[in-house]
Length: 75
Image 1 (cartoon, rainbow, N blue to C red):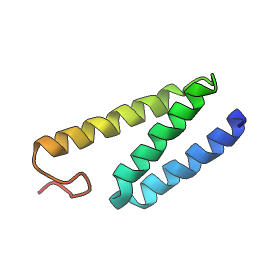
Image 2 (image 1 turned 30 degrees about the vertical axis):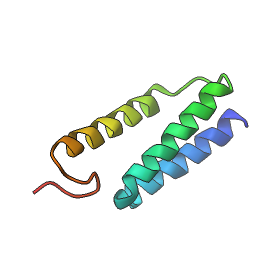
Image 3 (image 1 turned 180 degrees about the horizontal axis):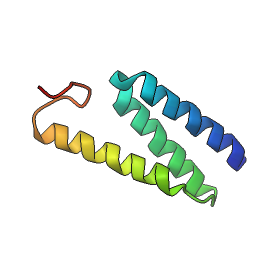
């Protein structure tokens, strides 16, 4: 799969994340899979996407420690 194809898929994924925040965890998993696929093909991992995945993981961990579901807003 060409790098351009990955870029298009990731762009579509990011659109989904912004349009469907209730599905954030599922979309994060998809992002993680895309990054792993890129890495397995020897393609460079975009630093901003790696940072985004790290940020999302941290958010889920933080919300889990607070006893909240990841897709629930804080009150």
